[in-house]
Amino acid sequence: MSNVIKSEPFIVNIGPQHPSTHGVFRVKATVDGEKVIDAEMVMGYLHRSMEKLAEERTYTQNIPFTDRTDYLSSMSNNLGYVLAVEKLAGIEVPARGQAIRVIMAELQRLASHCMAVGTFVNDAGAWQTPVMWAFREREKIIDIFEMTSGARLTCNYMRIGGVAFDLRPGFTELVEKVLREFPPFLDEMEGMLVGNEIFIARTRGVGVLSPELATNASLSGPMLRGSGIAWDIRKADPYCGYEQYDFEIPIGYQGDAFDRFIVRLAEMRESLKIVRQALDGLPGGPHSTQVPLALRPPKGEAYARVESSKGELGYYVVSDEGPSPYRFHIRPPSFINLSALKEMTVGGTIADAIVSLGSIDIVIGEVDR
Amino acid sequence: MTRWLSGQEVADWAESLVPGSVARVDPGCCVLKPEALVETMRALRTSPQSDLVYLTNLCGVDWWDHFEVVYHLQSFDLNHIATIKCEAWDHDKPSLPSLVPVFHGAWMQESEAYDLLGIRFDGHPNLQRIFLWEGYPGHPLRKDFVSMPGGLQPGLGEFAGINPRPEPPTKVVG
View 1 (cartoon, chains in turn yellow, cyan):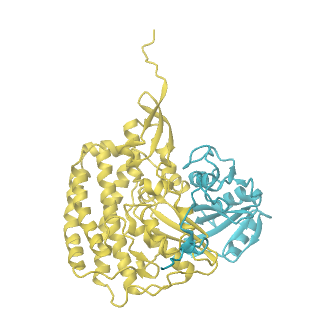
View 2 (view 1 turned 180 degrees about the vertical axis):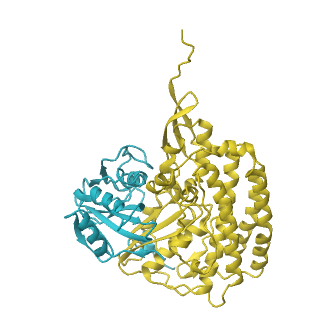
């Protein structure tokens, strides 16, 4: 008589409403015992058809839509879209406008990575303390955005040709405060987690992606760099004068969830370096150029991309000389980073699937659009 | 700085790797024939000269009489990016070969193009609607999809000058 217990595959629904899915997103995991043997994604719960809506609005009216794709990094999303339109229409941005854009995009990366790191550690089981520490730091950056643009999350700050307003008095002091208080926070996070045996046991070797798979599956951002490919749009295809700033591209070596976490922490330090340099060398002059409100770019198409906190964020805009884009397409990093979810989760346990999903850092507003 | 390849450069590579694969050359892009698409893409990916290993972006565009699928392909080592297009001329039943055998990253993006534009990708392992539900009437990103179920009009047409707002009735004083 055999004493092996037979198990049958059955389906476990993770989501749509589950804290680990970071929004309304569902994974239909087929499990055999504790092992995941298949994972199917179900999405679209937050689909708002932004690409269709954008075809009916003018170029400037579309900027608020881009806030609402990745609502945790609206500045980067604004930036990607206005870069695409500027490329299409051939508009130059003054130096001050570019420097302000860089400061905002990097502050946004800090805020978004705070969220990513905090919730990821939460998913891995370190209940609440790291996420609260991360939120404490994020709050200071959100306050800067509120002071500059009037909104905390959906900033709607970038404009075609520059930014909406010049910096307010007192802005520099607040950014200085962030620059001063952020490194101790990062030291604290690293001290608590990087050498932590439980955290390492939970994340090392989980959701491993080879560099070949990461490239072939079009992953980008910390997902790609965690697998050891030093690819960063800010270095490879500089926009807004990123070539003037001195920073490194942190990479991981094993391509697992832990490496992605480390890459995000290291990227925050690099972002602080960029903000420091941009703030010190902030040029004077106008913050924006005059652009007609009813902009009609010449016939053509443009694809512009930025390195948002999630990865490569691209906007493909086609113009037919009308006041609104003929076609408006977003290349969302969160959505495409999910391509490899099945490869990351199959073979592991349910608990590891949660860690893998958390390490992608998805934002459902951007996945579903 | 990433170099944007001209259509002619990409067309020369494609023509030398797979003869007869190029349908048309535009200044900014190279239009491939659908029947040679997968083979040419695979050759462009593996050839050390082109090294287009990374499918950056894939999206469809409705041009009223035909559909166009735009591929942006990136090389990491040589740091150049190519725009490649492929056209489906049957507007009622557009279909193109799927790139999933070459680029795993095409999976989700092709599902999206199928869902929102209705372009079928032959050879896709699991082509089904990704955002909308099965049975949704029509494909919303098509240009002839002008009214939503229930008679709702998409967009604020009066701002774009497409659908001017009717004049308010003038008040007669007295």
